Every structure is written in structure tokens, then in C-alpha cells.
Length: 70
Image 1 (cartoon, rainbow, N blue to C red):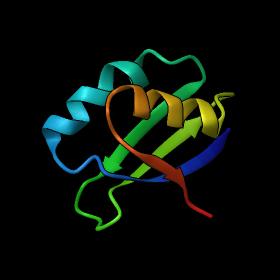
Image 2: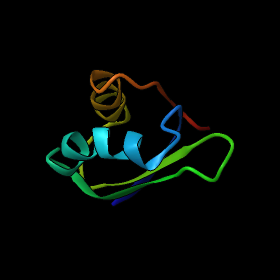
Image 3: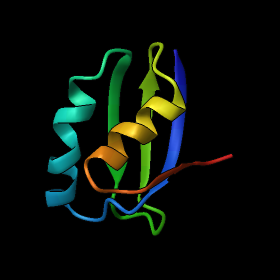
Image 4: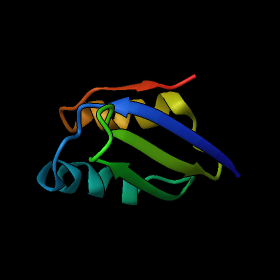
């Protein structure tokens, strides 16, 4: 399992609920959360096979931005 982190513009619980179905139903995600208290709104994903690009595509499909943290 791999931990992936992304800087996002998911900045409130309502925004989190918009991306929730996409991330909850994605194959290869063990668990995920968004730290909306962090200035960079960090999305942390415990990957069980999903790639960073796939996660970014899910987030973008819900109308938000995500970029990988190095």
C-alpha cells in the first residue's frame, strides 16, 4: 500500500461530500481524507493500486483541482 498526497482546492465539508462518491467508489483506494484545516487542503489517499493520475482525474471530474505533493 502506498500513501499519495495532493494539494487541492477542496475547502469545506460540502466540497468533500461532492468528491466523496467518486473516491469511495474508485477501485484501488483503501481510505482517503481531506485536511480542510491545512492551507493546502491536503488530500491523502491510501492507495491499493490506484495511480496519482487516476485520483487527479476523479477530483477534476467533480470540479476541483488536485496536484501531487513531492
